[in-house]
Image (tube, rainbow, N blue to C red; front, side):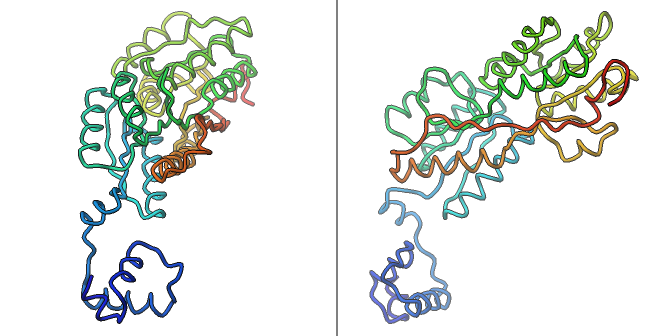
Length: 331
């Protein structure tokens, strides 16, 4: 740093202010001289020393439940973009919905002294979250909440959008409607199933076709469900359930929407191009990821006063041909 100061003709403290982005009392000419000196000398600030001095690493951790989901991929992009704009870095971890893997990642991120953690939580590490909260460690939940914990969360209005999906199918004349999700146990899935079932019950319809199943058992469950008294409409709980169901339906010659109307949570780029185009529930993943990152950075900077405990986004039902079928006629 001393070499940069001498070459730029300024004090060492002025170079330090420049490197830390404090330009309030610095002229454009001074900034230009310092930048020219840095480039000429090939100077690189010592990030370790900077972190020790500021007691920050300018790095956050992001733990997603399953990076194969399009939702998680978009969240990763939004978090990385927001961090880049704020001169922060993000370490991205994939927990595969495995509580033990999630725990190891949290321990690793703490060991690396990241300034805070953004997580799509499993539901089985409550004790670890409680310790983070007790220590005042910056933490934000995304997409899911953990019961009993006072942690800022950014989630979807899952009950309402599930209710809307059921209502749409009921309006098409369907009475035997299935919702197929991965196993329950996380708040988002629980809320979707609750909202969906409530809508069915409000219309006097059975919830017998509402099931939760592991991905590798979807074909078997569909085979059983469609053999006797089958549903006339199916809602898949996420994009991975849809991609397991579609090949099975094609193999069995089940026409969509003539025999089985179809809706899926999670918008996909190819959904409008499929035959027929698939009705989807589009989650604002980028906006949710950005908002969650902004909330975490505000925690890190000690700007706690106006941080809401819950931030809830609405989803959009993108109606396409796969669900537009009423009493034997395409709409």
